[in-house]
Image (cartoon, rainbow, N blue to C red; front, top):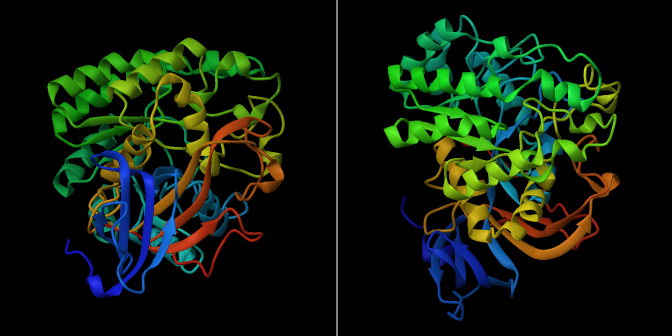
Length: 450
């Protein structure tokens, strides 16, 4: 990718703590034509006519990439939509989201459905958006056309997804899909729980919900996926890993050289089962939030690289869908705007650094989505997606100030660390926390393809 013409440089963002692929250092980022033109020494003379922004001692991050977001539009825009989801993303330092193929109606399992999704996003997005396609029974012949239409990869469920538009698949359907995806060079993302290991909860408590979806469900599913990966050669990505018991299978696959990767989520890293108040269904998700000891093991795996990335699994719904108990409430956690802060709050005391956050929440996700040539890093030729972030700022989560469509989140009332101050998308300032209206200008987000 050729760098932009230097004569068009319009912005220089300088700071003493810029997180580059080579590490954190003082630098000046020269932006032209929406991309990073050059990385210069901190005190370098800026190009004539360029606006200069000095971040001082704040940390400058590449815009984060969240590859697990349920936007739900079209069809369930009352749950969340592109306008509200991308506002939340910008406020959270996320400059690219990749939308999951389910919860919208129609589900993104045909080229026509993907076109409907693109149309729904048009003119509504504050940040850039990519789209996953879906693997469901009977749509194997549509995977290649979906890829040609712009799908970055494909998601499948091994268990009931919770919506009838996106039924689960078994080994037979995966053996059809995976060779196709191998030829396309696209990953298969899988909700990895074995339905044979899951039972209905016997009561409405989180404890009963946790017992109904034991670690063995994830272990069995991951082991089966590793076998299918070995058989087909297709890249497999395990989404929202919650059970540390599945880590040995992932480590063994990595040692074997198989293209198997995994993510975990902020709620598995920041929360623990023993801390969940009675009846607090805003904590309900699948797989469930597990014990504190399990959380510690997930952190160890993330730190060593056995878990590749962190993604939000932002899955909101209207408040009435969270009513009732852990048997009846919708299973999903809304956290897109708070993912960076939640992960940093839990990780800083464990020795995590801003460079670790970039590896887990920018570089890893962009690599999974196949857009790492221009997203998730601050480097010449990459998109000028930039975030000024104060890692030391503490704030209490106020439901009424969140930008997602509905303020239901387990983080409400919690004190978190790390505040996003400004966000640029392709060199344009889209969020400035210091303004009464922090969102600047019209929506400029684009659909991102490989």
